[in-house]
Structures are given as C-alpha cells and as structure tokens.
Image 1 (cartoon, rainbow, N blue to C red):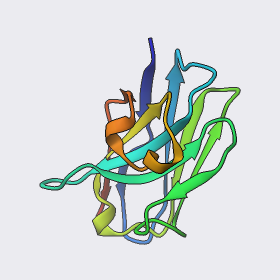
Image 2 (cartoon, rainbow, N blue to C red):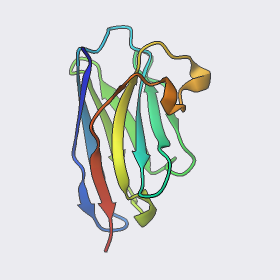
Image 3 (cartoon, one colour):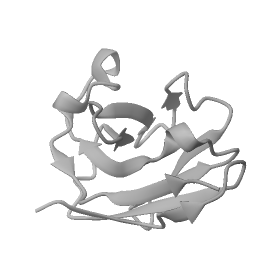
Amino acid sequence: QVQLVESGGGLVQPGGSLGLSCAASGLPFNTYAMGWFRRAPGREREFVAAIRWAAGYTYYSDSVKGRFTISRDRAKNTLYLQMNSLKPEDTAVYYCAADRNGILSTIRDPNVYEHWGQGTQVTVSA
C-alpha cells in the first residue's frame, strides 16, 4: 500500500523560501512520476510540478517556473519541492501525489495520480 506523507509547510514572508518533503512508502519500483499540486481556498486543485521518477525529467507550471525546484531521492523514496521567491498567491495546501502508470501527455493532470498525501499548508504573508 502506497503512503505519502508531506512535511515542511508553514508561514513565510513574501520573497522568502520554504522546502517541502514527501516521504513515500510502498512505492512501486516502476512508478512513472510524482508531482506536487496545490489548492488555494475557493480554487481548483492546481498542478505545480512533476518529476519522472526514474529518468528525473522535471515539469513545472508557468506560475512557478524559475522559482520552484522539484527533486527526488530514489534511495530514500522522498520527493522534494524547494520554493523560492514566494508570493502571497502561492498560499495553498500543497499535496504530493504518485502516478504509477502515467504517460507524458497527462503528467500535469491530477486525475491520473492514484495516490495522494494529506497535504501541508503553505502561507505566504507579511
């Protein structure tokens, strides 16, 4: 059984940095991708970033490109999201997710991810 546990959320001032982690257990060795999504109050769940688990290729939404970095440690089965130059509009609950059998064309689609963490709150405010 796959379990994903996020950590690292919190309150940060605009322009600051924050790092998130997602510890995965039970992850199949041939998992296709893992991603970060977020949901702000009153808004739909939004793609943030994804990484091809084996190959390491990364993908970002336009809103975070250049500011956020997704990475993974396969030996530790851990996914990371380093967030720099944070803005108030980055405030949301951040979720990590695992896509076991995906394809590249749907890597940004939350509906193809089978496993989700419980989420961690990130608040960007002065």
